[in-house]
Amino acid sequence: MIIVTDPDRRVKLPFSRGILTRSITLAGVDVGIAYIIASEVQRELVEKRRRIVSTDEIRELTYRKLVEHGLKKEAERYLFWREFRRRKVPIVVLIGGVTGVGKSTIATELAFRLSIRTVIGTDTVREVMRKIIARELLPDLHASSFLAGRVSGGLIEGFESQVRHVSVGVKAVLDRVQREGFNAIIEGIHLVPGFIETDGNTFMYILTVSDRKALEAHFYERSRYSKRPAEYYLRHLDEIIMLQDYIVERAREHGVRVIENIELEKTVNEIMEDLMERLRESL
Image (tube, rainbow, N blue to C red; front, top):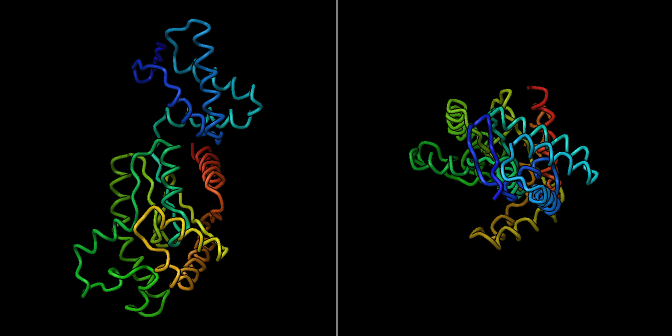
């Protein structure tokens, strides 16, 4: 068994290919290649009969293996994320976008890459608020996002009203996260630029699926793994697309990055790359 020592935390842990693989994927390396590199690191340590190694030695060896595989840029990213995690700087990532664009899937994958344990959906926040606030007081809170206009003005007016109400709950979550100093990802349609303030360690992204047929396919794919029938959302596709146009316009007005979510790996890597560049500036 190979034991890894961490002088900063004063702990000793068994070497884990799985943990190292996840650490390497932070740099935007495909998980298959990351696993190969982690295996090469382990093999070299075994061949050299190393029984105790430091985290610094693991980092240097992994960096060298990445460079040997022609992944110089990824090697630099790997060093950055290792240093960032060592400093324990808390971050909050906000993932917005309309129903069906893949927010939950992207949030889950980001949480895995970044080792973030807290993932919260704004639908959960809204559900809690529904239990507290009667329908008669805030009728739009009790409607679907794309149907809120039927109880409160037009489509956009009703949606904005719902977003304002849910944003109160979201801000309470953000206050708690920042006060406790832990990492979190919050995703949901109610994360609309201009309604939620972000500070230096809070990063917002808006996901879109601009092609109508592709968005339809997202609903059918989602219905395979949940109790949400695709037909219900497809009947309101025009309203959903109108809300998407509105959210994208708000994002551009407030300088929030808009990402076309065509393929999971590409979207996650784009967010990770942007996070790294912005964190470098703040650090």
